[in-house]
Image (cartoon, rainbow, N blue to C red; front, side, top):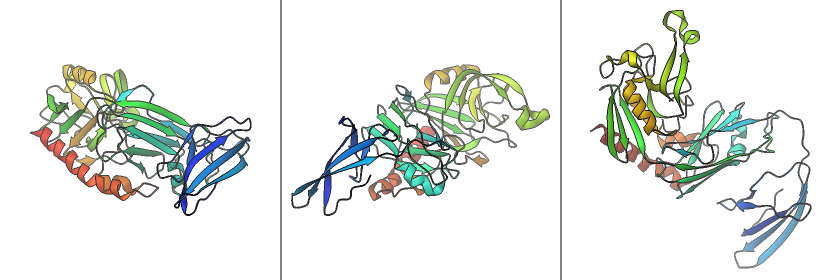
Length: 357
């Protein structure tokens, strides 16, 4: 349902269902549309009352009745949200929306209009689409402030795409950002510097990926944690180099299988040479300590390796400069937000340099 206003602005919108019960909802920040807090039901009749104010102060009220489309048996647009209500995350936690299959490029603007993020204190951000359209990352120009409260909604129910698929449900989460903690892994020195609340908490010798299987450079994010798990690389690396072994204190950095983890077998190499298959190897005692310190969403900056992280191989929202991040937004980026990233990139770089001193 669409009602257009010329020469003024909408001051209020009220929507009721067939029984007269009002629906909760809010106007978009730019005043272009009213968004219900919950999806409208299929095949139901609603009445919208729109009050508009002209520039000279005159007010006009329009009322319209509409009926939503009936539920149809169509292929579903699957979706996922890597946030869980009530959890606390690190300062680099992006809002990660996943789509199965990927959203076609021609539909991304329509989908992006249905992706809502609110933060308190306010830290506006921008959505970045991976090339396949399978994921979209939302982040502000600089890391979230500690203590920020974030509410997210993927309002996809009822949205039809050009490929015949349709969103069937909304997803939402309300989370909190925790204390600032970051990890800088330097291939040149073979050391990890852990900084918490602006102070160096520990320096840890590491062994990274050997030349044939290098670790990825870039700003990565802790994606998941497991006190104990099984690594099985026999199918990937073949019988000569493949292995199956139990790993302790594993913290995932990429979908491709790069982790920070305990590696008692490489303690003699840590701080000296790279011998891993792409992971960040650290000693058991350091691994146990680090595991207790970290949150999902803490940033891990890896520098100086033979390869760079590829977009979408993990939560790579911070692995590129701001101007590159916003380039794939399906909607125009307001100029104040577009230019805000230039200062943020400098500040992030300065923090990394400082933590190396």
